[in-house]
Length: 287
Image 1 (cartoon, rainbow, N blue to C red):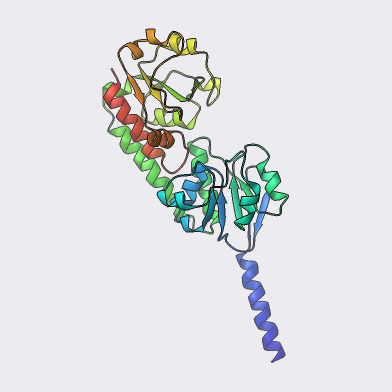
Image 2: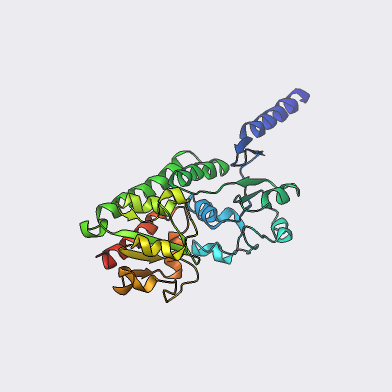
């Protein structure tokens, strides 16, 4: 009987060891898990959407104040921003895992409280695919799960591109993502989506993904079409010299709704929808 109990104990321990795994996050930190996390806090909207796209929304126990998609996450406790989370509120959720971006010193603070923290932040299309795979591993899902989500995104991008009229492809586009103006360049994930559509971006990758521009730069670039995807949602073009641009004079401007703007500026599972938002603008406004 004593031997039987010993064998059962060894079998139990062996199964627990087999279930354990490690994840290497974007800071080079190895995070060990004895079992898949059942209580997850996400402090970045794109990571929240990624968890849900992989079918694990029910594991979320708290999100940042900007995470609002899919609709069911709006019922979860809001734990502050990604840069300035309410640390006490995060701890109260008793998370098995906290997903954060690179911003600030949030990861260090949370790790000092003995929480398991994984830093992930997609910045381009390749990152979105990689982060899908990383979150899939965190959730202990088969590789086919993130692969299926990426296939859906990639197929959607191809379908939107194929349906874009020839005249829309000839447009030279400027996209503003925040007042400043801050633009989405060719090197941003938004710029990559435009490139997938076969459309030119007037802001080169050499300026960085989201450069702050002198308004005169845009005047000199003279885009055929302007897309405004910033949260301030200004109704007027009030930068110096912009009213003289052809795109402004001829009202070739798309002022995205708040919902559409959020889709466009989030590198995550809805990038195919972002392509549709931009394609609709191009079809309606391109010369």
